[in-house]
Image 1 (cartoon, rainbow, N blue to C red):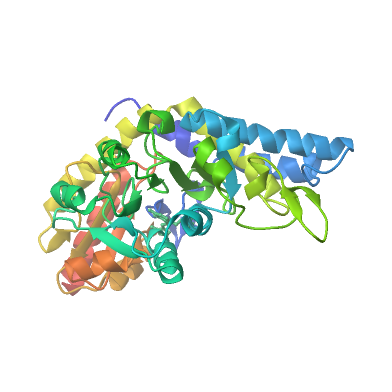
Image 2 (cartoon, rainbow, N blue to C red; image 1 turned 90 degrees about the vertical axis):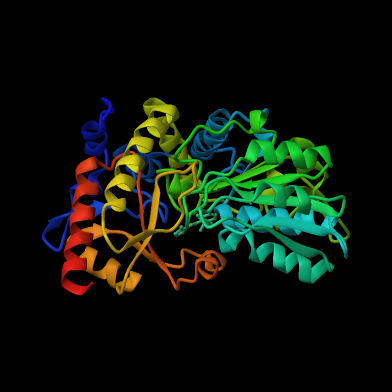
Length: 407
Ligand code: 7TS
């Protein structure tokens, strides 16, 4: 393995020192949510101890301090994804809320009966259901780009499905159930050739690779703080300024208005127009600490290390008889989904837990993916920058031992 300073990084994550059932914790459920470095935890504590007040409203010192810190995260996010302006960074609760916002605000304004919304066969439920709801409300039609058993989108089918009827493309950057990294840049260019705006679900991609929204030229990019080593309850909707400006608010309330009378309200400008109500103040500030941490390590360094972890895990897994990998795309992020002959994924999860190993077993909120492979669920090990080759060895030994006992 390269000289990635994994032990130094592990020391920054206090929870990794926990024991589970008298075994050292092996945390391999990072796609569900990842653990937090001490600097993020400290940031949360510091806010509540020294900087906490409501934002955007007060003239008093503490409110100004909280507002400055909260707004500094917006600038950190802007720089992290290379957005052109911090007006394009809308704070939301997470990926799910961001997609619902676009579906309801952009969708209800721009999509009509007979129009088509194009998604892919490997979407998380949060990039399916909001579009189905929009289709019910508008009479639009949902179209789905199919995939191969390797877990790759069929590009020719995508090109076939992209037509003048298509009014929006919403596609996942990296699949949570399969690990597939989609050729989003190419897809965005193809969609734009037909003036189709594109939303990229970056929930899984964002912690694993550097993302440049201007280079991608996507219209919307969405992600959650909790998968990015930051707190839960805060997430990001990036949108191109011109699109966001033309969109109506999603929620109405305080903080999103210029002036209110009983007859009519005048909305605030970006980004406040989409940020009604008191936000997750401390979580927002601590997301800034998570971005500082990641920037210091370097996203390209993280991507290179995780690629080695995935290659090692894949090679080991392929040697286990009776183990079938679900998702073997050529371009893959650090996720290993698998099933074992004769052992239900939930039993795999429970038995590995008895060894201190946390993996996810289930449909991963991607039921159509499970249906496609004809399995009720998969076991999924998902890696983060603090995982090690030794932990992968523990996982493989654990799987071997349960095959010996139950297989
Ligand atoms: N999109 C993708 C690709 C995801 O993986 C998830 C969460 C979401 C959207 C929704 O994010 P949220 O933060 O709004 O909930 N994925 C998972 C998972 O794989 N296991 O638990 C949550």
